[in-house]
Length: 78
Image (cartoon, rainbow, N blue to C red):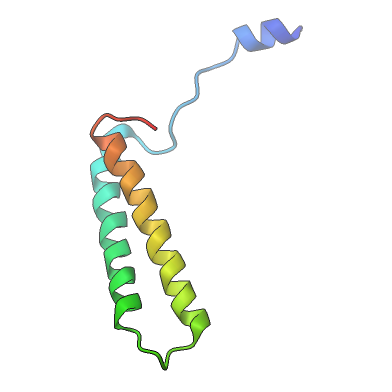
């Protein structure tokens, strides 16, 4: 089989999460991100910097994925 035949026989790429679940995934990730951001804000200066960085990374990751899923749920595919 040639490379062209392989390409012609290929199947389209599909998302691992169905499109109807995007609003639910948006709600869950943004809610968890806001909770993580809240825990980062509540932490005082006595909290070790590694724990603060961990909270910040988790919050920004969850809020980033939440923003992507929110735009996908609205029909803007990135």
